[in-house]
Length: 568
Image 1 (tube, rainbow, N blue to C red):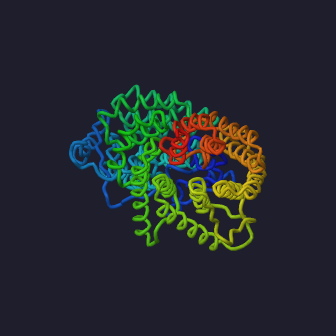
Image 2: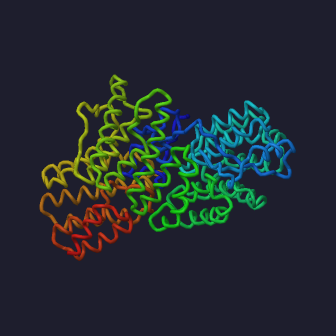
């Protein structure tokens, strides 16, 4: 896994506080994928969707490769002999993929497995499967195409272009030479699309041109479900600056068209969930959410992914079940590697959120404490005075602890935290967590002290941020700083000034495109404003604020409780 890029994108961040530390990273090797990429702004990219990657390796991928009229007869025979259909009752492990190609029959199982893994964003495992296909058939053009795509993280607006081109160069050193090894015109078109995706120009320009390339393939081969899926993925992969609803609905329309005939295709199901992953559209994603984990239980990410829709709808038992299944898949992989239980990761974090929203605080606490222990053990294994960098579980521990601070007012950072070895983002997390704990405890002095730290560390973090990142990464920090200003005013009896600052925080959140998952700020500003209004006995105003809060975070416990208090 290459070093992560310098940017991450707000729309796909782990949105607890504002994803400063990077939460759960994706990629890397198997033991690292449940950890957290964090420490500096260059380490926040690969979070959310792919962390917790785990496969049940013994379970076979089902692949149904329809005959391509232009493919060699040998492959057509292979498809007929080994490709069970969606009606065969053999839908196992990773879902059903259908990609006719001219590769050797002996290499088909690994190729189709790699493709299924690729659609579930299991990039490292997919790369290994494609490499195995190449080892069987060194001239298998599409196996190199697939491996190169494992270096393009569409939803993070990032790619390792050099690594991708190096993979393509293994097949042949030029685009013309690679095209000569492609067995059909369709394969040539897929390879040419990668010359666009990994070619010259800015990342945004190449992503937009790639949409056109995939649209052309989809139009020419309308029965190719993978062309439809990759076309849909390319559309929202080019949305670099936030969730543009129109773009995501364009992707949804493509996927809805192919879903009836390909309801077990992992890419169709996965990308449908992403298309509908916000509270307004989440009801449309329930069908895919309820099916994806059943179709692809061998991919831990697929087991977790359903909870994107469940969280958007406030379906807490389903959120817990989905993420517990994903965590168990990770634990099976850990056991196979001779390691103990996993405690930190993307699915683990969402599991904690589900537990907290379900009122199962003790179960949430078990994972919070377990993640702290794992994180501190990792730090202890890196003695010295140097800055702590690389894949760290510490970000995940801060993440889930901040959830608990927002919900219950609990802030427990282990003794011996090496603050001087940590970047400012961690101090910002700590200050925000202390502020929430003091707010819950009605401790005005501690709240004011922590609020001052939030604003100081927040200013420092914003000062390090590039102008390019500021529009997407800045709003969450700014909202938290506005909250801090409000609580500091409240601590000194300045009620109206406090409301003014909290309304500023609400306005910042309202102006930010909706994101998936737990709230962008651990304590949503609407919720905080509503609670302060209630304490001032301004129930009518509070009721309006809580109604807005529940539209943004349906069925969230504190907002439900606040709304009930406001109605009395």
